Image 1 (tube, rainbow, N blue to C red):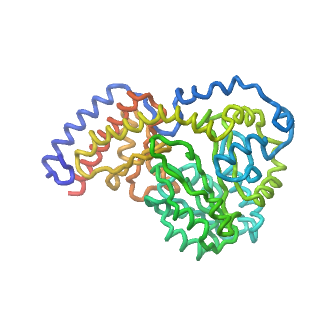
Image 2 (image 1 turned 180 degrees about the horizontal axis):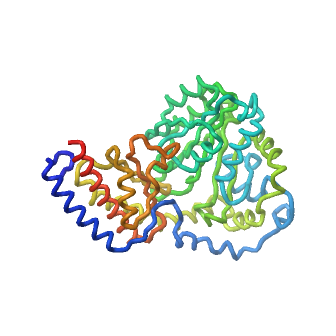
Image 3 (image 1 turned 180 degrees about the vertical axis):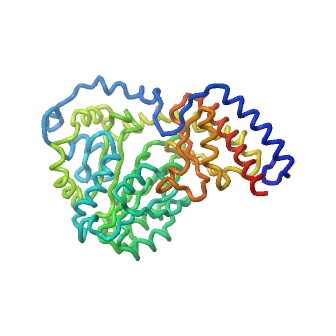
Length: 424
């Protein structure tokens, strides 16, 4: 049945049948979680050998057990430089969380400003940040916490709508930055096109201290044999004379241990010097033993890529499972949902009929499947169309994931029928 062309009597009969099926799920006592993009225990097991590496002396003789070396161990800087496509002296290696480093750099802009800032951002009459939507809720939460005005920019199949971005940053000096997940974006799985990357590097900004927060969290997280390729932002910025514009981030959070990995900042040598100067009062150094352990475990980018093939073998069946169930349990009922199978990353973005996402997530929750809160993909937690749901397939076992996705499709169908009835 096509819900969009069915008559009222057909929809009422369908809703009765769907509600009976929903009660059956409620009686199953499910307790399944698809709310966050967490690696599964099997993925975490892939890195257990890290715990058997007992290295503390670096290649230059640095004792990682002691104080100092705020910028990070040379081996770790070199490893992250290879991941980000920049030079080792353009890398600061920190603790386990790239999100913490993003927060620190936003706070630095707010408190002190940057070397090219006319004043600290806290002294500006207003500060705005561009937020491609749908996007990552934790990014938005950082800038919301500091009281910035969050400005939504729609995503396209090639990245943020650059016509809108370029117009806004050229006209408004209160716009200080933009959040970007440039490869396998959270949640749509979009990778920015070469032209989008070039436009970021070349665009004119009215704010002299405008920054691109380039969170390349999924740079090696491929799930198909046809991975996307991302143009190097720093190379493009260097060519355009804007190398102080980007702050790049990546981590091993979804490569080794989410709670005990290593994260890094990539920036121009000028910005690295400024960041380290301002970090100095905060800490003497990050966990250098863990940095050395990771450098020894992987050795180089090729070692990371080989390791990620093992992740792909675990993740690919889960993504294919979700795609298969959506095709069988949602697609036959009319144009009620849209999604795309990404080439990598951690999420599938489900677009529903307008006004249905919250209802679907609530129905799932009441039947024992926890989803990411509807609206989390937009600033302030408000999705104006209420039609975006982030699916995180990574954590549940395959059979539990099948059940959870089947329930999701059932809830999607219930909400879609209700939507049609309400709008007749």
